[in-house]
Image (cartoon, rainbow, N blue to C red; front, side):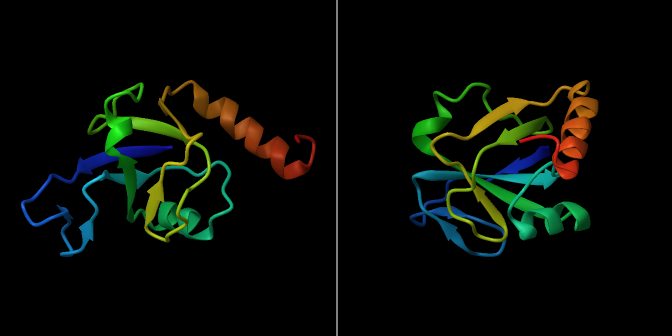
Length: 124
């Protein structure tokens, strides 16, 4: 589960300008996320980011921004399901089968139970 805290905007310099003066290609938009909880992950850097509350970027291709449901909004929390397409330590990239769903508080208990079952080996 992650909360969207910001979105980069286009600059005239050929890419999207970030705070650290790095550039992202124009065909992707970067959302800044605060990872709140990791229920299951194969990426140790994502788990570490959630533990130290450091920001993580979410790269979304421009072609997916218009047709994604729900549209990603600032200050909303989302459940992100899927594999990271690029595996970089401080950025999540949407894969072709990634699902982003607006978070509902009543899911917390269910996902914690799933996490416990997964750790005990009783869930496949």
